[in-house]
Image (cartoon, rainbow, N blue to C red; front, side, top):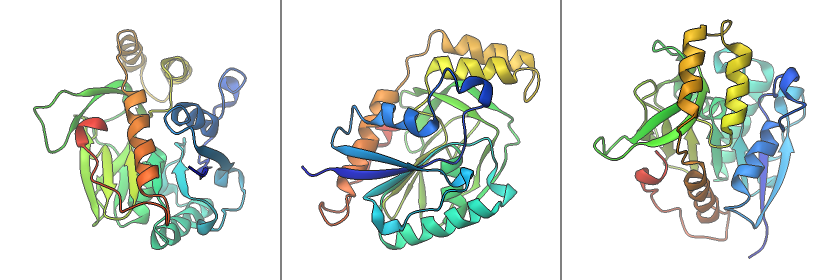
Length: 251
């Protein structure tokens, strides 16, 4: 099989005090997804740093990272990326979004993101399939305050949590997004909780989230397999239309 050329759009930077110990968000995504998708060639562009976006036809698919920023800041680079996403949709280039990427995609495609009335989602969260509320929940890592509050017209909810009901979205065109962070490790979330506990959120929340990390059985590898299948099936001009994803595999 020929190489699958994927471009990661860097929407956020690892906080400066932590970047000596942890890789960039594009590098985290590559480390997470590459074992499940060995034929992929990963490239990165950093809109948040002012780098120009590629032609949407230049790559076989795109991944969007998380960010400390909020979609409703309406920054110039965000507007440019929204335009890029719409052009990529017209070309049927597959797009996979994470956290801020999930939110930016929703806004680009007709939905709305806002600060959650339920507060912060921190640490290990239980995500259940939207269509199968009695099914076993998967454990995933979260670190967010914003969330998608209005669904885009062509989006279907695959899964969510008590705090974030619109947590996994699949679109009628080849696009899939998750509010949580399958690319994060418990060590990185722990570092974020220590850094921001008592400032962005109170210390009690930070301690509860830290406690959740100790006994987690994360579904990161399973989600990587779903993302890999998504890109393979939606590969431009080389595969049939993508099949419906089993919600139990990406909750």
